Length: 97
Image 1 (cartoon, helix red, strand yellow):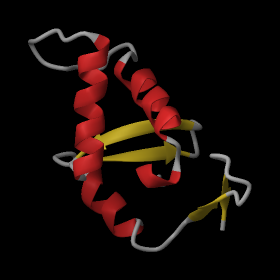
Image 2 (cartoon, rainbow, N blue to C red):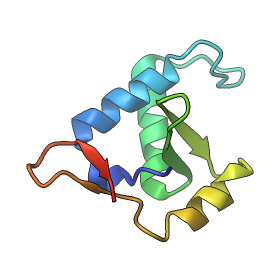
Image 3 (spheres, rainbow, N blue to C red):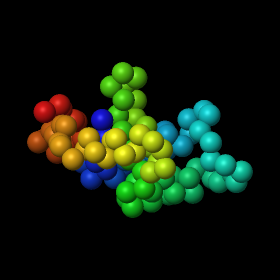
């Protein structure tokens, strides 16, 4: 399921991206950038819509899918209908709708 980045706090988003870029096996090509640079690059992709933040209910983990990934189109199509709502108490707790 896609998670709109606007539905979570900037700090939570940053932490999710940090966790993603530090995962073992994540490939960033030939150049080795520091953590902050990698986080900024991924945040830019998410904000421009060139990547999607997703939650896998089977593995209970977040993933970031780049626009050139085959799943991007499917996730973009599925996102047209709201799948969940943010808890009304101002927290980042998500509940299925």
